[in-house]
Length: 266
Ligand SMILES: [Zn+2]
Image (cartoon, rainbow, N blue to C red; front, side, top):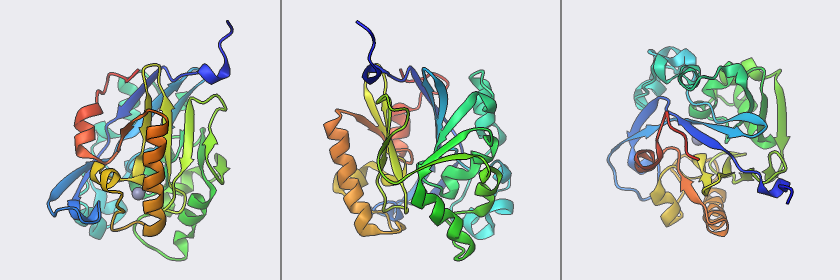
């Protein structure tokens, strides 16, 4: 029998360990108990049969060794950012035998500074995002605030962008389904990856920690907390409907459970 498009799976998925930041846990989930919590900022490399795909890009290479010089002293100190040369995406790709130019598609969960910083390494790639996220990120010039940085966007403003208004099946083959789950930001999205062995939902920042998914709570810095809770509820439903496991990118325990770099999940 001919292999149908609906049976396309992702062969391998790697997490690329990036920098991290440390904040009070209580800001990551409404009602969470106060304690110091170190949050990983990974990117994910996805081997589709027809393309090498990146999901998110982590912190900016311009912040390496001295985050204050790029993000400003206030943010760098408040978030206790740490980012070293070996954690830069191109260094992680090199460990796996790839160059940035091997990556042809970059899917952006959203454009906050801890996800969009490495976009500058992939100007040749096609970027995928929800349209209102890009609009919001560009608007930072009118209302400066910490979560977006125009300097992250500038190097890829002239790159190819595929912008979406609603959920999308990225390659039309069911292998990568990108769900619009706004609330944390204007156009936040989570990515459902179909691996041979299982479905895996890469939540990105629709939730920051597992407690938020379990208790259906927003963070204290979501742009629209009401929409954020609706999105958390929908995320939960999508995970259940698809029999998926979920990897919450910023959850420290998920990191312990899933991070197998340099080995892939298959
Ligand atoms: Zn975010």
